Amino acid sequence: MAIALAQSGVTVHAVGRNPARLAALAARAGAAPGKFSVHRAELTRDAEIEALVADITGSGGRLDVLVHSAGRISYGKLADSPITQLDELYANNVRAPYLLTKLCLPLLTRAQGQIVFINSSSGLAASAGIGQYCATQHALKALADALRDEVNAAGIRVLSVFPGRTASALMLERFALEGRSYRPELLLQPEDIASTVLCSLSLPRTAEVTNINIRPMKKSY
Image 1: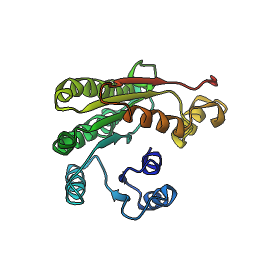
Image 2: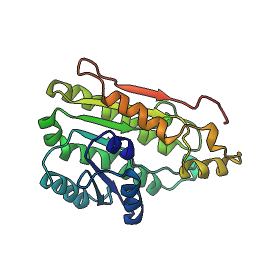
Image 3: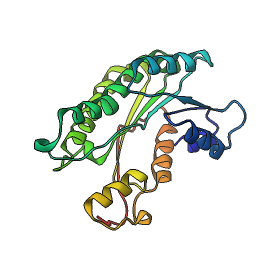
Image 4: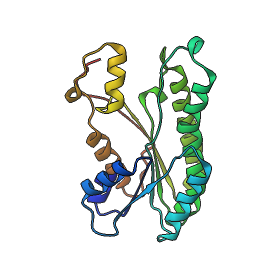
């Protein structure tokens, strides 16, 4: 999504924990000087979220689109999983986007911006062995739905995207845990999600896409 937005001419602030991966992302984006900046931040730390927002505010004070695409997943039945596992998932998947959105709202309101929550198919249906993660994704959907009702009047659009299985390192791990053969060419591609989001962001202001379910065309699981 960062690359798709940059290639469409948007000024991008990319956020992540790994400086090397951020630098590689900036190189792949190929954006004009000053159009793509990277910010190293751990979003489970309030002070780092506050510093990030202050940095973006100081670099121009405009924010048109906020995309939440960070998150964490873990596996295990409720009876076997420590409560700290749920705490970690909540901190990453619910609390971090909540606080980041809250701090960015003044900028987004000024620009009549848009907020995108990249959720998961687990945010719509729960299954055994992944209940803690599903609970956080359901909470993220509730957050987006309530926020939409609160900010639509200010001209802010809120979109939730619920992708099915997408080719990624995370999905490679999940297929291994399930004992399945991993065939990434049969899964959604990151570019599929990016183009879907970009299309929704580009709609005229007479329309708002609220929820998108997107699945692989061919089922390999």
